[in-house]
Image (cartoon, rainbow, N blue to C red; front, side, top):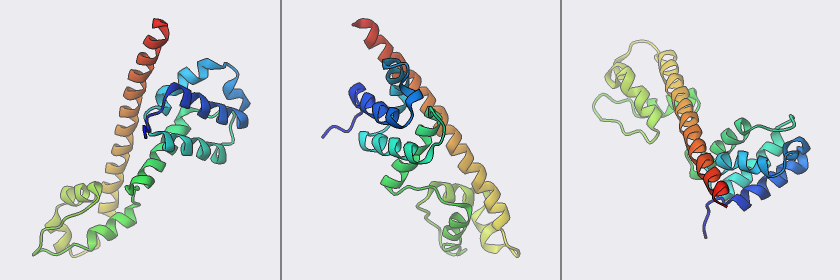
Length: 171
């Protein structure tokens, strides 16, 4: 089964959103063309679930892609088991492997990066609690990852938008 979002799938998702947010569909097919690059970044099931999330959690009419994209990202992370850890959860994961005689292996890349940035031996041999320092480093890395996702998402949207416009103009 192909899980790629087509323009028709995007139209159905916009139609569903339009039933709850009438201002969204006031311009008809233009809305589908505008939203398609944002929707097409995700598998169909994630895009459909993100639309439902937007319906359930957005009070403003019309919703913006800036609401849809983070919702879809969150759902995709949940679906793949790669959810974002809080700083406390990340600290707990880091502390479980603090042993100066054994090299750690962290499943979460941000935990691994934060431990590396602070210094594994510094964490192991610290005489005081390092949580505040770890939290600061981890939150910076987490924000950077979110910013990079936004940039990649925007660049992908631009590419899909240009491709979509080229298809429409070719007709």
